[in-house]
Amino acid sequence: MPSLATVRQSNANFSPPTPPVAIFLGGTSGIGQGTAQAFARHTKGNAHIIIIGRNRVAAEAIVETFPKAPGSKYEFVYCDASLIRNVAQTTSALISRLPKVNYMVLTSGGLPSLWDMVRGVQHPTEEGLDNLLAIVYYARTKFILDLLPLLQKAKDAGEDSRVLTVAAAGHGGPINYNDMGLKKTYSVRTVRPTMVTYVDMAMETFSQSLALRVPGATFTHIYPGAVSTPLFPRWTRPLADLLATSIDDCGEYMLYALLNGGEGAQRKGEHGDDLGPESYHGGDEVRDRVWTHTMEVFDRALVAAGSAKSGVNV
Ligand SMILES: NC(=O)c1ccc[n+]([C@@H]2O[C@H](COP(=O)([O-])OP(=O)(O)OC[C@H]3O[C@@H](n4cnc5c(N)ncnc54)[C@H](OP(=O)(O)O)[C@@H]3O)[C@@H](O)[C@H]2O)c1
Image 1 (cartoon, rainbow, N blue to C red):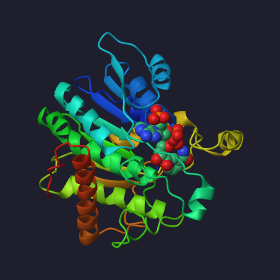
Image 2 (spheres, protein in one colour):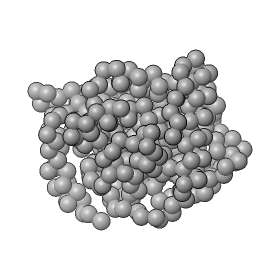
Image 3 (cartoon, rainbow, N blue to C red):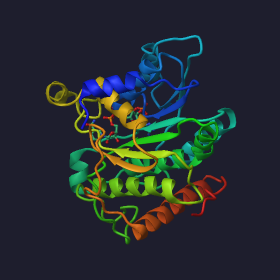
Image 4 (tube, protein in one colour):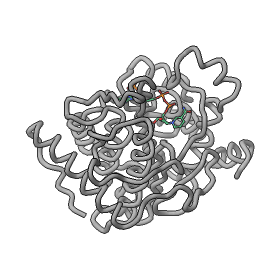
């Protein structure tokens, strides 16, 4: 596992041939913020960086910290990603105006109250999805799915196309085929393991399915370890600042994980180390079932919104 000094040095050597386009869903706070700042720092402002989330004020303050170069392009795009129809609108606007996407970092997330989790109390979105599953799994998957053509354009130009989704690789669990949306079995013991295996399966689908594959692209699922971010209640932050990784250091590790690693699906630990089969609960049948379920969720949400269906069969 590389040291922080090695990671920083490697990131400092990052020198893309043309200004890259990078999207940070969840870049308004915490790990996404730290990674966006590391990306801006190491590209020295020669990049088009798009921060997506709900908090415009936070995004503008973060952009203020980025170095400025003549070709710098920084923007905030509002999207409440808890609804699939919002994600679809945002991605179709991006598709219509961006020439390519080289990098996507997805960190949208939240922490439901422990009391609700213990009691199995869910907070469904208007589309009937569990809110946490919606922002950590369904929304991120929809973003990647819709923006594959832009990742392909980067590859066609001989450039990087790399996706990093930050959740909890290595902490997955088995899937319950009878309750894929966790409507009956939602609990503190089911939600994270299920979500983590879903993310693993989506990353594999993006790298293996002939209908979706961007040859040469990398799809990494990473566990960042404990990071001191606003995800945790304010009263825990002094302790977290002492014991957990800072946003800045985590951003360097996440950037390293984004930029390194071979093509295809990758599962990585907190310092970018390869997890191998650790706590892996996937396989061909699981991948097929998870993808079918995911497409059904997208189709239901978009049909209800009067939009076209996802239209992607694997
Ligand atoms: N921090 C840790 O120790 C740790 C450990 C393991 C895994 N993780 C995972 O890493 C991810 C990022 O965590 P973090 O610590 O960086 O959390 P954070 O500081 O709370 O950031 C969460 C991000 O998610 C965005 N978000 C939340 N709801 C959204 C919505 N409806 N639509 C669009 N964006 C939304 C927020 O943006 P807006 O408010 O602008 O919408 C914010 O940028 C989470 O999935 C978390 O579970 C974190």
